[in-house]
Length: 264
Ligand code: SAM
Image: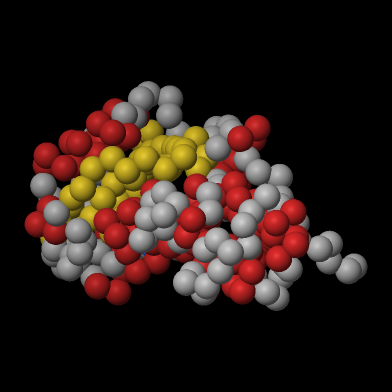
């Protein structure tokens, strides 16, 4: 099964066995897991995951790949292929349909829409047990960055407020057909338990984080001028002279809670 990879679908098929094995062993699929794969392609990850879990739902946008994948999977296990754009899939409804309380999601993601897919999954965090994604290494570095790092920014804060972010392994371009222009990494995301999640309004957190990093070289009192005055920033326990890149995700939650209530 060697389909011509389509650039428009972000297709880079994994072919190096040792990386496929390392990814599957990091996912550690077991019988009884409700596994969902985003973008199965030719099945490099699908078939070994299916062999271990016996049942898997795969979401693929490219119709041309579906018949051959179905044929290869038939002797291995129960593969259900959903022809859809993953951004339109309601994971809460899918979990109910599959009779699962929470899904285990995996995928070597199409890089052209990797951030929208990440945020789509994070929005459904309550229906997800964990996620294992192959992404551009640069994106994984940003997701996992700590305050003070050059690459710490909006993506780091928004993701870390929703999930535990665990980078697992780097994968070189040569492991794919065709090789992408960038290095890749596999990351594990585990949604935070309800008691670990913050209780600020999501739109407020989003507004503060967006404004703070839009002008990351400015002090907070300058960058947040439209949202909060220096006294309110100080009242949240944060130095108005600090820069966004030095704040922890929890600091942003405190700033969001200090925003004046919206007039109804
Ligand atoms: N999992 C395969 C592998 O590792 O070899 C293929 C990975 S390839 C990087 C990305 C896959 O996502 C392709 O099969 C592509 O057709 C599929 N895809 C692209 N956009 C998609 C979307 N919006 N929804 C679902 N699948 C999509």
